[in-house]
Amino acid sequence: MLTYFPTPYPDEWWYSVLCRYHVRSGRKKFATTLHELYGAHPLTHGRLFPGSDCFAVIKQLPNVLSLEAVLLEHTLMPYYLRFHLPEKKKLVFNNLMAGRSGGLTSIQLQTPERKQGLKFCPMCRAEDTETYGEPYWHREHQIPLMPLCPKHGYRLRLVEIPLSKLSEVFLPLSSINAGNDVTPASLPWEPLLSDALNCILSLPFGTGPPLGYSNLESTLLSAGFGIHAVRGKASLDAEKLRVSCTEFYGKSIGDQYFAKLSPAIIYRVCHWKLTSPERYALLIAFAGLTVEELLGTEIPVVDPLLKKLLEYKEKGLACKKEELAQLVGVSPHQLDSLAKKYNIAPFWKQCGGKRTETIRITLTTEEKQNIAQAAAIHGNGQTAVFAREVLLRGVNQILKNDIGGTTK
Image (cartoon, rainbow, N blue to C red; front, side, top):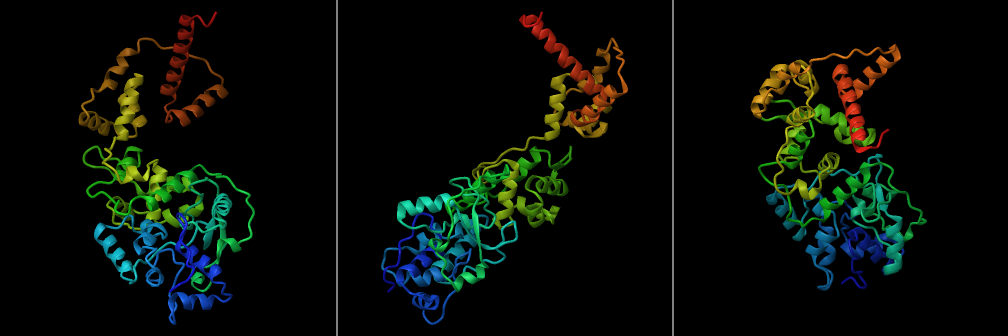
């Protein structure tokens, strides 16, 4: 029987509960507390994925703590099992409930900065001390990829220590000397990623991947990351996605999670054959999805080529088929196939007949270069089409102001 064993606080990490027990026991040596908890053969604790240590401790307690509640609410088990198939998830859970190893391997232990350790939020530390009289390690903060506190939005602080050493020591948060100074998020993706990681952890345990479709794949295809296929289903462009994700997250995360992104890995992600949660969290934050949307009802693909084509049709651009094909990003032959696929009348064939007058404008060399430079950035290099669109936009605005009586 373990006397004075503490009741876990909300979202307290199990290792933190053991640390508080060590403090309450009054023992000076870690080895003495380890013997009390596990007997003559100490078990490994402080791992990101729980093992048989939870079972070994709880079986010595009166019926005040449920092993199931500890696994679901005070460990990272739900986070690491989120993308496993139901059969595997049930098998691992039953093993842990029976005091056996979960058998999960290949867990990412390092932060994006290639460090290991325990993390905490100064705001949570101060609030917990005021509410409970002592601070504690929150389980959501211990996700290695987690950059911010999901509750407060401030950067987490790292206490560097090899995670393998946690089985030998008890390091309560109360023993860490730290002020309450906070560092706000400095990168736009940090809140998105923190929310995604926390949601992967906190959703109901049974929530998992929907079989038969991938909302991540459809969202990325709609965003223009597909390899063009007018006929048949498009696939994701691994190289384009790798470059864009690295630009979005920076070199550190890019090197760890996207440097080896290949069509085979993309296939595994989009068919739920990849079980590690980190890459899912990074990709859905990049795509602007939520975890609920990722695991929710099917999201249809919106062909980005169709979207572009309809935008140019709405603008009424007067251009040849070859020019329009270049703007859309396809060949003239593919433009015909695209229009046929979506039953769009070839409006570009009639554009030439609308041009009844030509205006010649004399420009300086610098003015011409400026127009060409702007066209390269905003008009896909189509200088004439871009200049015409800008000119007409300006004329229409002048006429609108004249009609509205705002100009003299």
